[in-house]
Length: 485
Image 1 (cartoon, rainbow, N blue to C red):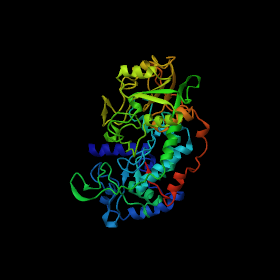
Image 2 (cartoon, rainbow, N blue to C red):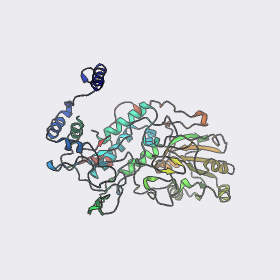
Image 3 (cartoon, rainbow, N blue to C red):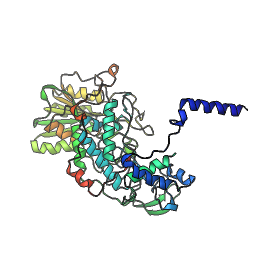
Image 4 (tube, one colour):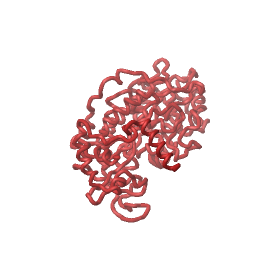
C-alpha cells in the first residue's frame, strides 16, 4: 500500500513538474537540417541493436584497459568501435604529434582566426591518429577561484569570452535514450563511416609492440605505428604563443630590446628541464621553463625551445653578450653576473594542474597565488643590482606581484602564461604585445578577482577560414574531424 502510494505521489509530482514528460524524458531528435540524413542512418543502425549492444555503444571500457577502441565495439555488425582521447593541447601521450598552446593562451591572443586555426589543426591531428572523439575543448568559464589548478585548460572566467573561444574551437574541430542514436548520428554526420583512419597509436605507451589489453597482458601485437601528424602546425603554435604574451608593465618602452650590450638571464624557468621536456608523467613537475600545466589536458612535446636557447640565437645576430644563472638559490653567483649586465631578464613561474598529481604540496589547485622557488626574492635580488630588470612570468593563472611591481628598477613585466616560451624572442626583440589579459593579475591578495573581459573588434563577426599554409594543406583529403565534446 505505502509503496503504491509513494509511487503515485511521485508520478503526480513528475507530471506536474514536467507536463506530458516533454522535459523529463525528451524524445529522440528527428535531426534537423544537415543532420537529417545522419539521424536516418543512426536510427536504422541502432534499431537493430540489442540492449546489450546499446549499452556497449554508450559505455567506455575504462582508462588503460585497452590500447584499441574503447567504446562501442559491436562484432555482429563489424563495427570496430570508437576511439576517445584527450586533449585541448594535442593528442595525449602520443608521439609525432604537436603540443599546442593552452586554451588560456588562445584567449590571450584575442584573435578569432588563430583560435580557429589551432583548433582545426588539433582536430586534424586527432583524426590522423584515428581518434573519433576528442575530449576538448573545456566548456566552463574557469577562473573565479584564481588558485584553481585547471584554469590554463579553459579560456577565461568571463562567460562571454569563454563562449567565443569554445564556439570557435568546436567549429574548428568540427564537433559534431536514446544516447546511442545521438552518438551514431554524430558518427554518420561527420562521415566517420567512410575512409576514416584506423586507430594507430596506444595512449601512454610509446613502444612499437605490446599487449592490446595491458591489464590482462593478452593480444601481443603492434600497438604503435608512429604516424607523424604534425604537418606544418608549428607555425600556428608559435604565432599563437607570441600573440598571447601580455605586457603588464613597460616603463619608457623598455621592450622591445634594442640590441643590448650584455644580458643577464636569471632563473630556472629560462632554461631546459633536467628531465627533458616529457620527463615527468603528464607534465607533473616544475623543472626548467614552464610551457604546459599538468594533468589529462597535457600532451607530449615533440621538442621544446627554452627561452635561453632562443635568446642566445638572437644574441648572435645582435652581437649581445649573454650570461646566465639557472639556479634560483645561488645568490652570490647571481649577484656577480647581474652586476656586469646592462639589462637583466628574470624568469619566474608557478604551476598547477589536475588533482591526481601533487607537485610541491599542490594537489592540482595552487595553495596560494605566489610564484614558486623564491621567485619574489629572486626579482628583488636582481633589481637591487640591476637598474633595468625585466620580469618574465610563466604561470597558469593570476599571481601576486605586490612584492616587486613598484620597484623602480623593475622596468617591465611580461605575463606569458604556460605557452609563452614559443614567442619570447618576438616579445623581447621584435614587437610589443599589448593585448588585455583574460584573467586578473592581482597586485595584492586583497585585490583577487577577475576583470570583465573587454569586447574587442576581434570578438565580433564570424571567423574566416584559416589562411595559414599549414591549415590549407592539412585540410586536403580530410573533410571530417573528430567530434569535440
